[in-house]
Image (cartoon, rainbow, N blue to C red):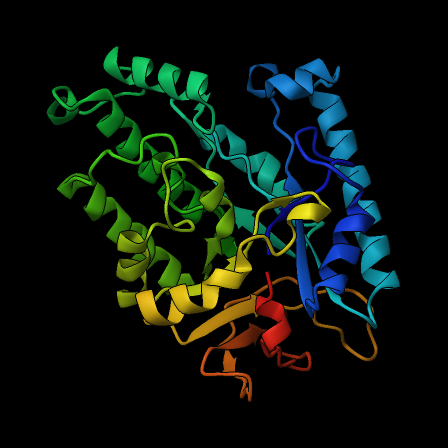
Amino acid sequence: MHSHSGEFCTHAEGSLESVVQSALARGFSAIGLSEHMPRDRPQHLYPDELEAGLDVPALHSRFGGYVAEARRLQREYAHRIAVLVGGETEWIDDGSVQTMRAWADDLDYLVGSVHHCMGFPIDDEDGYARAEAAAAAGGGGLKEEEEEAAPTELVFRRYFDDQHAMLLALRPAVVGHFDLCRALRPAHPLSQACWARIDRNARCIANYGGLVEINTAALLSDGLVDPYPQRDIAKRLSELGVRFTLSDDSHGPFAVGLNYGALRTYLEVELGVREVFCLLPALDDDDDDYGKDSAAPAAAAATAAGTLTTTTRTARTAVRRQAHVLRDRFWRT
């Protein structure tokens, strides 16, 4: 439910079509395309985007090109694989919401992600250090009781607060890398204040029917031993009624399904999860327009391949429900 291509993402590889073809080759029944959504302020462009000569208008133009190509692939491959056209949010502050909502009308679903904290990207060391420095300097309107907290702790708290604001504003069908703030600071313990925020966000997701991705890209991080979210948070989310979907956060065809081979044991044995979910584009026989995702109740799908099954949520209640069953080949490394 979460993927990128070098055609529309400067830090990825391969064409968008090659990503779909890779999913087909691995036996996927569905794939979600979710390029990064554009930002509206020049200071929020990533270094690789600046190096590529992109500016804000170019980001919007590129994303429009992505949507057009993704829709073409959705139609062309409709009888071979279910292709969903989504976008990964770039939630930086409350000012991000209008851009996200405007583009959401052209998409099947959103992957709700937070990559920034205190205005700085926290998925690279330089940005994370800047976020910590801003926190130490009292940036971001810290509350009085937070003034004595360590900078990393403040970044963690702000991350989960920003995530909550994003959840309330956008209600994304899929929540991306739930605990990205831990990627570069894996040894930082989760405080009581952080757990309170995690519980709040989990209840929010469960209440509106969102899915949290089990994101295997985390296994590429030196300090993380589990997919996002790490198992302590994943167990808590499960206890609070949150449902999971699978994502590789692939940045090219080579990474589609990356590390999926170990997921079955991890989910069933380590987390006690017997069921995962996926989104499918829903087609009405009289209407070839794909609907938007909703929090429609999921229906369990039987499988002869094992105890772990997947369920789907239809995009519109008027559309035919489709069952998607995990096959053994889906778990091949």
